[in-house]
Amino acid sequence: MPIHPLTEGEVLQKLSYAGRRLRDMRTLNFGQFAGAPVAEKRQLGEEFFFHLIGAVELTAQFVNAACNLGLAADCVTMSEVLKRLTQAPELKATLSALHASPWRDPMPSDPYSPAGLVYRAWNYRHQVTHRQANPYVFRVGDLPEVSFELDPRESEVTPSALSLWDEMDAMFSIVSSGCSRAMSLARRGSPAQSP
Image (tube, rainbow, N blue to C red; front, top):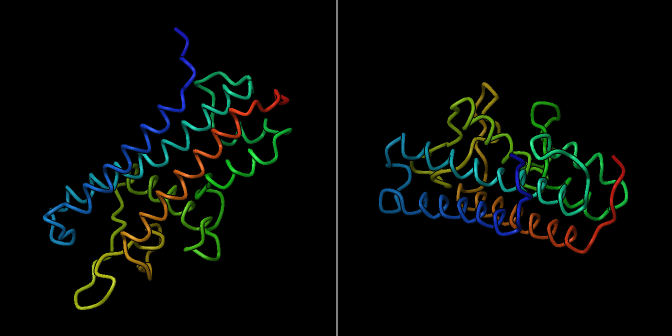
């Protein structure tokens, strides 16, 4: 049975799941995230990144169908979609800004820039979901009280200078607006691209 083309609503639903996990994290343990059970912190963080990056991947599916790129639904990857978007530079740039390959590319020099935050969101999704890494740094008597580790792959812990909430809000905002923009551009009727 063929896989149906994804709708914009399905992408937005995936983003709403990520937003819900973010709200759940904020209210966990009556707003005292640091003192919450480890398993609950891990689960909510894992689900946030799973859904956030999942929305990017669903956006690639949406663009594939809307732009008639010709990829079978089970073969769609962001890399393949980007390769085929030869006649839609604005759409290609918008999608590129939502994609990162932490296993191939180094972290951008500014980990707090939009590109750095997108890179880190992909990296956290891989590290937290697939490798059970702990991305959180907790501080006692120092601010921010809770932040991310800049790169959980590194042996030396380097905490982010920003709070967990500031970064998660920024990641969510960047991805949400980028997915919406990409879908809008794709809906405008981008011409069929070269396979």
